[in-house]
Image 1 (cartoon, rainbow, N blue to C red):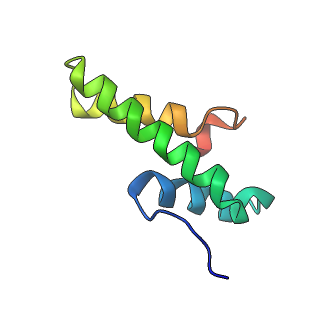
Image 2 (cartoon, rainbow, N blue to C red):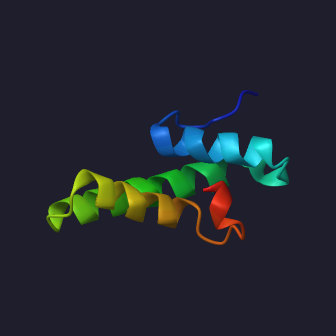
Length: 74
């Protein structure tokens, strides 16, 4: 059966990171999709709060990459 990744910006961003780091979660579609959804929700929330696109994106990526230890990789 095929993979069930929602191919949006945040999902692809995280998938690429996980593949580059050879992280075993690269095959965990639920992990990728839930992180991507949380990031998209954070972007929307920040935008509704009047934040700029850049700040909203920064907040979304912070949610997406929460728990990864190497901030220089983000």
